[in-house]
Length: 471
Image 1 (cartoon, rainbow, N blue to C red):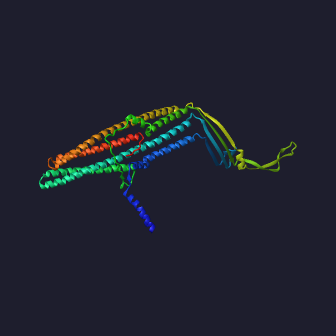
Image 2 (cartoon, rainbow, N blue to C red):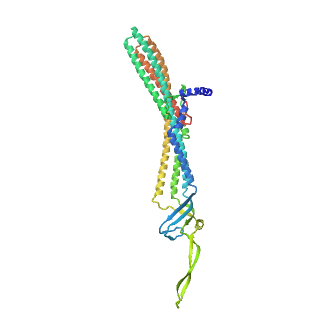
Image 3 (cartoon, rainbow, N blue to C red):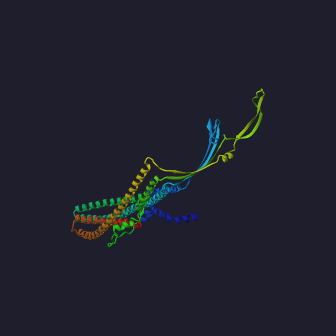
């Protein structure tokens, strides 16, 4: 009993930590998504299929080998395959054979099939990496959206707290007769508006959490909580490298580009396979077989019978001839297998002359497919450059917006403090006070948007040149 109590006390901190819930960092979220996302798992199954295709292509280079055995009963008049004689009674027979064959030359189609399937396997592996990149970027975007909504919620909460303090102060001034009741109604309306904005911000935060939870395929989301890193932007920070410099690096390492490149090579191999259909096919085959039949008999004993009269002489005397009867038995199974053993080996040459233009059609289709994947490769390259170019422009614009918004917030904070002081002494009315406060809130929201827009775009640019996602 004492040991159980000690064990319980030892596990209590761990149980309490489990109840409090795990705090997820961005790296935790990305790793969890890569391990558990169903679309990635499905894509990995495609890799396994490609591995099987490659194994089969390699196996096609080996000789084939087959064994056959049969056990038959024939009834009625039939031709015995072993004795090559007609039989009318029931005949039991067995046949055994082994055969092997191999293509010696077939326009290099077998070798090109192996190379094509090897390239398809490599391309499918890059497809998995490409999907993992897409999922990682989606997780990073959802993660940053949560951080943005958290900060925006904090701004809304602080602004609402200030407004509530002003509501209390205005209410006291109205009761004292210093201010008109209209001022109280106006600032109460402002309070209600900010409460609505706060509720909307809370809902947006819940939606952002839900988006990330769904990306992670989590079921228990009640205790889900993310880590809040310290994200700051220095005023002197700039976007490094030009779009062309980023593209020249990304085009050599991005998996979707590498996959497109490899699929061009695969299509070239498929084109060579189709052209190989015009070549003669030289193959070799060999076989060995034997059989057994109940209809194959041998003489086991000769019995001498009484002489049999076969005629008369001219003088009328009877002419007799000796008579015999042969007793037969089925030749033993093992003996028949040895006697009936046959072997064959042969070379076969097949020359395609006319096959309803099927070979020519296959060549034309494979050439069209090759042209198509070459165009697709260029499309993927162009799309990558456009994406990098757009992300670079968005990052630069977001940085400029951030710098301008930061100055604007600083100016509006000073202006609001001055406005608040003037409002407190009755130099301005509530409408002017609310206008200054709303402009400050809008500027703070714009600052947050530009900040996280810049952080996300920089993450995209870093990711394209091979840097891991991190905050």
